[in-house]
Image: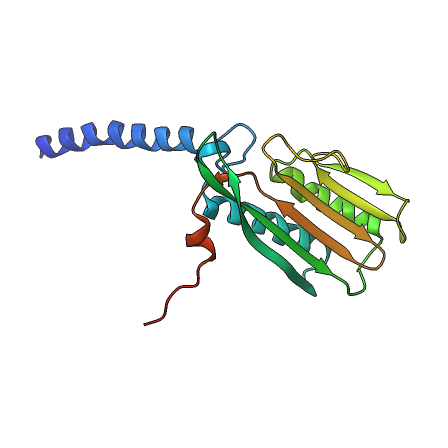
Length: 181
């Protein structure tokens, strides 16, 4: 019986140590557990963009959205490595459940929760005027990795658009139809 107790006592610190190591390596200070940079995969990119889109849709109006585009294109990861980037767009043209400024503020919160340094600007140069949530700031281009995220809210419609960073991947694997037996 004593041997069993000693054996069990030896396993407890090891189990606690393993659990602690998993928790420390899985968490980041900002709460964002998503991979970034060159270790990202096309699946990571798709998951992050779809998550941001779904959270934005839920914050504004969960129904009536249409995905307009979800396509991969070729890009260059490094000096000689080929990669892929995702372009994703969705829209909602049904009546909105609130004022565009209020809806933009709700969406801003979910973007910030996902680690986006989002700016919100009213663009009155377009008709109808709109609130633009953007990362990087509206009309400034893209991040250095080529990515950008935009949510355009006006009194008639909402448009979501995102382009990912270039990540290692094979365009043919992502775009070729799966053969059927």
